[in-house]
Image (cartoon, rainbow, N blue to C red; front, side, top):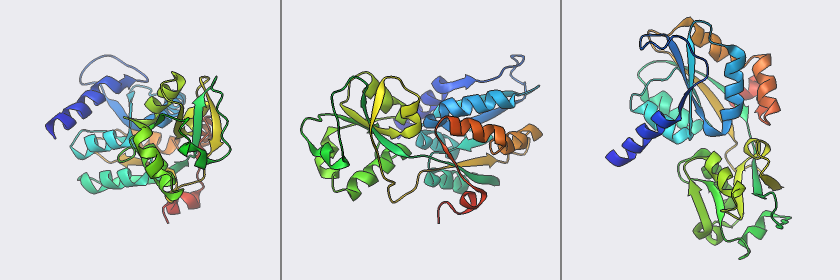
Length: 263
């Protein structure tokens, strides 16, 4: 367990990046955003549009599960954009302060292959073909994109045929990279990830699993939080941010869906 936690801490340290900067003093005020790796490009653009003013905004991107586990162990962040509701629920249950929450975005899964691959699949059932030797996806038991993919394969009766051929990765972006590099014949990733890459092609748009792909945004209300944190939380749901998310392929949820996406 210690080794697992140490890997999470290292992941946090490596993936921490400053989106805007101010004077490099330890005491300088800052906003920390944890966000699912699948939302990296869009969130980075949203934060650039927001601007930090006199306060630095730092975004940390990894799998929702890794980030949630850090938060439940006491690592501090102001905002958390999760790629599924369960990990957001766990954070809300674990932290000792109030959280403000919006179910912000929706996404879909697609089956991809390297852009120069000769593969042409017409239905998901063709994944059982022995021609497909390696299937890249995020970890199917902890990372949201992988959990959604496993549920989908189970519903289609394909899990037993495909399980031993799965190359599980720490997050969905790494699954995308395996396919881009030709290290996997196909991969299951979010549509937004596929649209960000010139190295893959979409073979199939996949139906929703029993659990819809919803991205909740949490504001973790720390006592000494700057008022700009609330402004940033609201900005994620602004017209400017919505346009950015839509340009990256996300589905922006309506006010009704924000309240009832998990019903």
